[in-house]
Image (cartoon, rainbow, N blue to C red; front, side):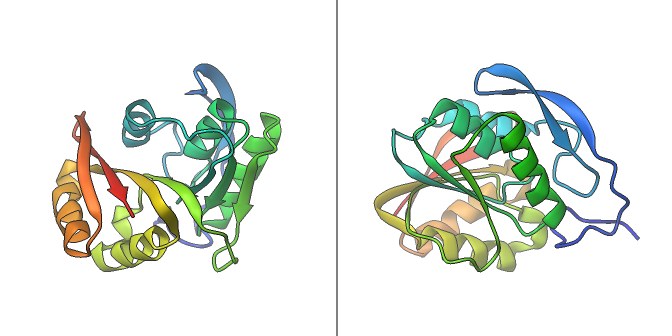
Length: 195
């Protein structure tokens, strides 16, 4: 049986390993594992997102929606140490990796949260959303998250052009959100959504 990165408990055997990735402008060693998104390294979409969007200003509260092993959370926490990063993920194995990676890098401003845990409103959301869960579930996830933005808050999303980035942006506009493409690179669209 094949395992999907968006399963709560991946059915594949754990194969935890260390990889080298660029986070916070420097090469770092982090842990990944089978059954989590982008286990072999920083995926191209996440790299495009992190190079294309501004870092959160000091003391911002940020949501990393679908944190995986922690690429976005770790990068933002390193670049903006006074920010409070909430890392949300359904995959239990990925959540544990995000916790371990934050600890390994000495980051105390990342909080890995459980699904359904009460959270405050956020200044920013950064996400490479899980498009493979399907259009309906992904839109529900994004809608629930974007409504948690404070007034004037922004979400930054990266979506592969071939996996529906343009239709997603159209849907967001239909929902009444201000959505615009701020970057296209390597087949990905970076979308800014304003509450």
